[in-house]
Each structure stands twice: as structure tokens, then as C-alpha cells.
Length: 59
Image 1: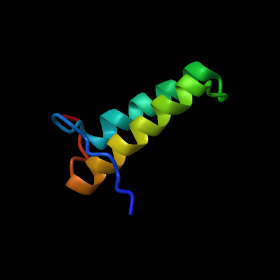
Image 2: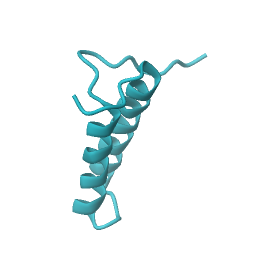
Image 3: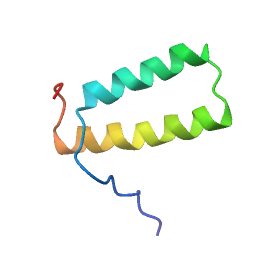
């Protein structure tokens, strides 16, 4: 069974990662390139890890 990739290093807060996700979408004009899609997916994994660990507030 596949597992989610582990997030290495310290976990940023969900709020900080969410701001980065919003900025990515704003810069892209709502249409992600393949590179932007990979970045978005990486950020979603990081955001989910922050939510699971309870790191919700800005660091």
C-alpha cells in the first residue's frame, strides 16, 4: 500500500503554507503549469502534515 511521503525538516504552520498556496494560485492566474502543479501538490502534502500535527498558527 502506498504511503504519503514524509515531510522532512521542521513543519511550517498550516497558515504559512496556506499563504504560499494562495500566492501560487494568484501568480498563476488560476492555471497551473506542470511545474506549478507539482509545487501545489508538494504544498498540499506539507499543509496536511501541519494540520495533522496541530501546527495551525503562524510560526
